[in-house]
Length: 263
Image 1: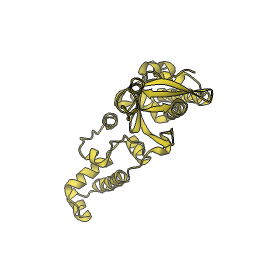
Image 2: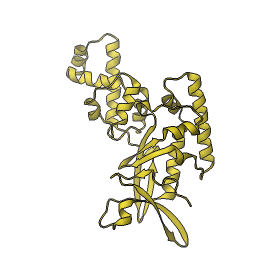
Image 3: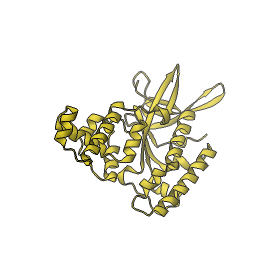
Image 4: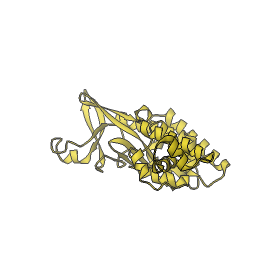
């Protein structure tokens, strides 16, 4: 059996994951193994990874299927184009997602990946711009604002000698503090729109004006960023403290680029 992700996977240290296999009960079992484990021992490299291909490949394929079928993907890839062009691209990406979903051994989705980094708690997929354009029959797709980068939760669960892989889905952790601060920012932003001053809001809430300004910045987050935060799909480093120290752009494309860098 082929290893379609050969040359595309990297572990948390940046080491390439190399296809390997073993024979168990007469059956060939494939893995993706940190390269340092192939030249050294587990004792020497305890941080090396050995991931079962039979779990990793379908989990990653499912993540990509959901990304292709998401209406926001086409919007991001053609953000300067007309609504009709965006709709046509969405239809083609959805057809591609349906083909992948219907055929577990399809070779479509691995070709779309340029590089895939597996880290502690997150997975980062960088799509190949030309491959995606060819597969979707689109003259060109944009990488502005990180449109070709997909970040999702990634977790390894140990069960005895076996490893269970969880990608995306319910594995995301919702940052309740961040969600509450966004809600507070929106509440205070509405008060400002209604005519209240920062001083009046600060007196009413019994906080200083600096906090008012910080929280209102949260209200200016792009809708997609807020959606991701509400379901726990934001980058790992995107926290309240991280946002407090950023000069948040007003433009949503620039925001997506900044947020994608929160790794």
